[in-house]
Image (cartoon, rainbow, N blue to C red; front, side, top):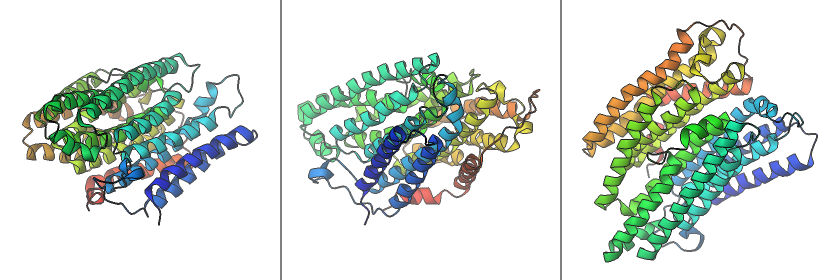
Length: 474
């Protein structure tokens, strides 16, 4: 029988093998390393289907004291693996841009590391969703973050990428300091770092409950940075625009999903405290308003998707306020499909024209396939019926109505209207704006297959969501 920890070990070994081969086999075409990484992760993803989830035990000891292999963890390990596979496919498409940024190097320079680092990031994300101890959360989070430091500023001769990497490094280091300080306060007040044992410890903390609550506030600051929630979102637009586009997609989807699962696990012992609920409520409200309003005037598609990422964090936080794990899970899956679909098209088109919205003018005539793919991505992000994005918002709002969070529902519905405006600007550019460019945009077979699969999955989950809703049932 395959056990859950073997999945992370396999991914780490695969990443080290890619690095070793790239270092010692100088004549190998590094695109082969990309296909090898995709194949290896696909095998691990198939193996994960045979992992039997085990219930988390509040009194577990040894290794299982900080590692959970419950159904939620196994599901999001598969989520991380699928995300990384799709991002690696994008990285193969992005290879020409990467090579052009190393003008004095060989044609294949840097691709090996660019492929290996997402594997280490994937292992960190997989550890993160299984972490049920603050110490292990910190270690897994640092594995993810340090990998992203390198990936964001990988094209270091590009001043924009260097600026993005510096901002991400400084602000991420600051958020890590808040996390460690918060953990220290919680441990000092309760004597526990295990999340399952914290519930009883918080209930018995007595006069120390205020100190534990202060620790939670510090931890929320750190996690707010990871999920791009207001007021910790200041890094998002510049980093998203400056980083290589596949890395931006990975940050937007993988890092956010893992951050929300950790947030749900961390908040569970403290959700009975009214102060915690009020704090999450205010953060959700601010994130919804800021993300959607700031996206309205954007003319650069990467910056638009950056502010869109903040807005979607607001919708997900509604689910966290209601503590509806299934609604949050479905929304994250929908977000994976529609965001990666949009970025996959952006990578291909941007190499021909650019990443401004005006660069998409007349795309429907130059490449009907890419225009249709971006259309599905945009309307799903906006929440048009019969797409995964619509049902994701529906389940979030339904959970809020059941919990009588009327203010969040009202603000959420109004901001959805804002989303229709700025997402459909891209659709208007593709189908209604004229452009003098007539050159067709080539799409390789692997990318065409991945984009087609994302289109089908986005529509399929918008019509038949039951597989995801059933995935976390016991």
